[in-house]
Amino acid sequence: MASTPVINLRKGHAVRYNNDVCLVTGTELKTPPRMASYVQMSIRSITTGKVHNLRMTSNESLDSVVLNKDAHEYSYKDGDGYHFLHPETFEDVTLGEDLVKDVKEYLMEGQKYLIIFTDDVVAGIELPPSLVMNVAEAPEGVKGDSANNVYKAAVMETGLTVQVPLFINSGDKISVKTEDGSYLGRAN
Image (tube, rainbow, N blue to C red; front, top):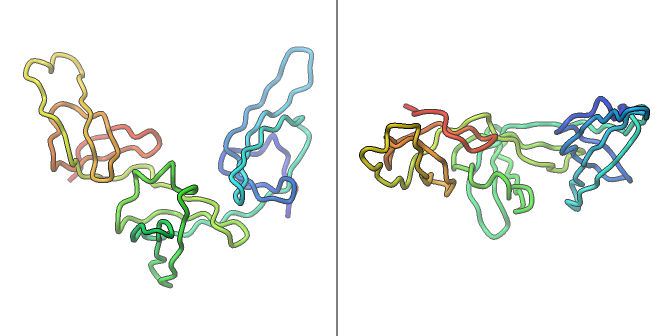
């Protein structure tokens, strides 16, 4: 376990805090006038889900934890959770609702996602930068509304609502940016 200065930590890094493995969810370096600089950061415990807001001087450090990312294919959801299958070993990894609540509208059967492990414990899921999704519902565009960049709300096959241009219809395939759920363009 290496000790890492908090000034070098970024979102997504794993650290050990109070004998618990935590993921860094945000950091900000603050340098007030006539005062020593400090790092304001928030970390989330992997086991309990509790969020800690820390204020540490820029020369303090935390023990870093190694993250392993492995591609798994999303299979299905049942009462136990969301099931992901390793494509080579066929090992089934089940993620609870707490780990996928922020990304569940991007989960599509057969799609590969990166599962993040720390100390052989599932820490979370990483989405690809963009996904191709089918439009399930899209209202008709009103004629004459095309003078400006007008968008309408379309519902994807997973339940995700995306603002799309008026020419997108039900059944079309579009590319969606997973960072903010925005429309990127039509897909083939």
